[in-house]
Amino acid sequence: MISPHDPTEVVLHEDLLDYSPFPKSVRLARYRMARLLWDWGYGHLVDDAELLVSELLTNAITHGRVPGRLVRVHLTVGKEVLRVSVSDARGEVRPCVRESGDDRPGGLGLVLVQEVAARWGVRDREVGKTVWCEVDVRQE
Image 1 (spheres, one colour):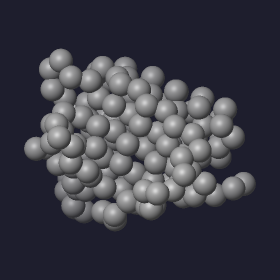
Image 2 (cartoon, helix red, strand yellow; image 1 turned 45 degrees about the vertical axis):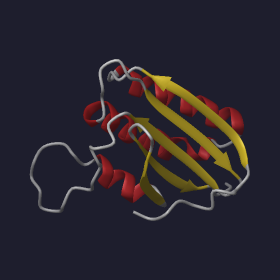
Image 3 (tube, helix red, strand yellow; image 1 turned 90 degrees about the vertical axis):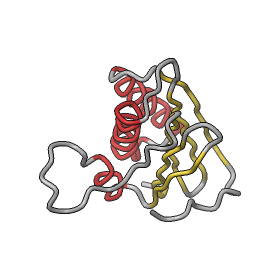
Image 4 (tube, one colour; image 1 turned 180 degrees about the vertical axis):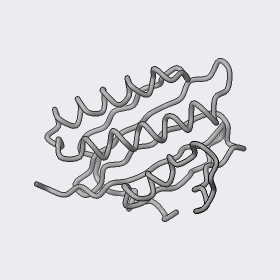
């Protein structure tokens, strides 16, 4: 994990929405993010952003679910960085990248995040945690 990009960067676009901790929310978040990025002129980042939000939100729903609590997806776009953050209420359950050679089914989400994102990490919250990742905004 690498420390977050400069937090003083000016945010050009932002979206924040809470979702129920059920699998259908992954599809809804992915579609919402794709629509927003196209509307904001960042269509070239849609594929990467959809993959990242899918993996982070799936992990939050699978491992961070607390009955009666929502999960939050926060998207920010700055001049240099697109950041996807997903917050859940289970701070004691920390994400980790699976070791190579581990033959258990599933569990490759963070491997994908690590390959696609320029940076990713975990930030503790008063209740729970936020897992974030960043993609460098490149103009096409």
